[in-house]
Amino acid sequence: TGEPVVLGIETSCDETGVGIVRGHTLLANTIASSMDEHARFGGVVPEVASRAHLEAMAPTVEGALAAAGLRLSDVDAVAVTAGPGLAGALLVGVAAAKAYALGLGVPLYGVNHLAAHVAVDQLEHGPLPKPAVALLVSGGHSSLLLVPDVAQDVISLGSTVDDAAGEAFDKVARVLGLPFPGGPHIDRAAREGSGSFVTFPRGKYDDGTLDFSFSGLKTAVARWIEAREAAGEPVPVADVAASFQEAVVDVLTRKALQACERYGVGDLLIGGGVAANSRLRALAQERCDAAGVRLRVPRPGLCTDNGAMVAALGSDLVAAGVAPSSLEIPADSSMPI
Ligand code: KG4
Ligand code: ZN
Image (tube, rainbow, N blue to C red; front, side):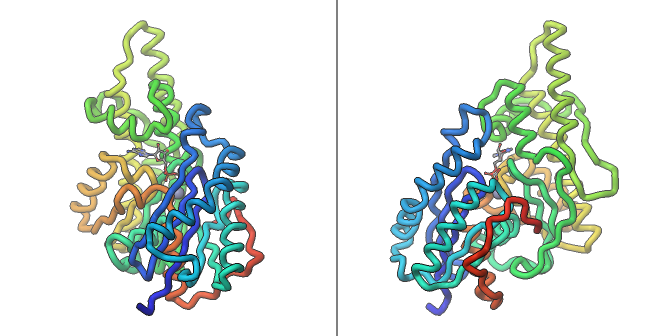
């Protein structure tokens, strides 16, 4: 077919992701994660991540090509996450992408990680409505975006002023004695508990902005547990998990729908690792239905960091005729949207 084959490389955090698409057809999405190496530290260690990316890069590219039934010479363009993310981790991916693009004589596209989280949905649900609002929630970011056109125009409406939503899940899991990364464990524990057991603070709920704040919530949960322990009473883990989770997803969905209303947008996309959260999905669906907003959430394997999302955005850039990046592009750890 005439559509170009795009190889996408993602190394902004702990996963080495390599995806291959033809147009918006997903051909491969291969991931090597160094999470097992970070888990014992209770968080991602940048030096460990960089070394793991270096070791995993070539095998992951080979694995993706094999999964797609393609050879390196079939690749028409290379896309890579140029930022934001961990500086050293990004650098490995950007250097590798330059090497592949140079060696193959094909164009290189340095892309923004957040825009890639939005673009990936097209691999599952087809072309993005224009405009859309996107809520991106993961361990590294919590952002609301207005997306007139994912290839050309993505506007930040708000973001967290302190912890990311996933980071709050991970920190609260730790005080509850649940393993890292804690999001899935809280999700599971919360199913046995009541979300209205404790009313934890909802940061920035009524401040009129589209920003988030989760550090006060995290501290409130820790204080609540301490008080309970000091009183010699057992901590109801499931109820605390559910009440914490309710506070997070209440604010996330409220602000996401406020963004849709404010900008007159009828389509909401949720992405990032926290989009796997069952209560977030349920409450978002409920509130979208009530507001007449259509909801799109990619399947979990496309929500967490991966190479296919980078390839998907690369494919959009090729299709939009956007000029390729120079082979000199830097990794930009704090790249704005
Ligand atoms: O997108 P991701 O894989 O990596 C980045 O942080 O960029 O997201 C990982 C985050 C972690 O904080 C993890 O605890 C959270 O997503 N997470 C969840 C769930 N699954 C993963 N948080 C809440 N509920 C879940 N089911
Ligand atoms: Zn991410």
